[in-house]
Amino acid sequence: MKASIRWPLVIAGLLTLHAAGMVTYAVIASSNPSYAVEKDYYPKALHWDDKRAQDAANAALGWTATVTARPGEQPGRAALTVTLTDRHRRPVTGAAVHLKAFHMADSNRVLGANLGEVSTGTYAAELPMNRDGKWEIRLRARRGSDLFTPVLTQYLVVTP
Image (tube, rainbow, N blue to C red; front, side, top):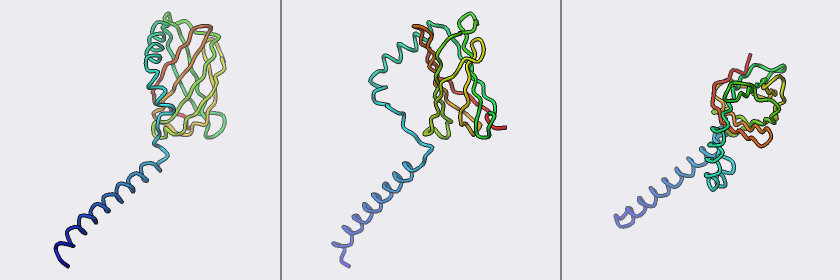
């Protein structure tokens, strides 16, 4: 084969091999169910100032959320308990509490629940959580005009 034909074929072959490799990597990366893109990330970015204002409102409110978990009544379920206290460590009662939670290793599977008040300042629900580890919990607690939206990351043991 002449050199004038061979080198363009080598270059075309290398470019084709590179493109095929990139397509293969993209397919592998997008087929893993544990990877996730933040839902509505673009509108959230546009409303970043609103989020910062809510963070300031959370700090001014002075509430604290504590999350605990234990194995639920049925296999594959966990009882999640959220305790809300104010800046003086008094229980926050009568709030409407909603949470979204996901395991850090499976962020594409987001669990959600409305929590009921089971005792003074303590709210609970059962969720289909079947793996121990680091979870992100996004709370939304509203009482009257007060809105509290903490994001907690903690290790939870949810299996017996």
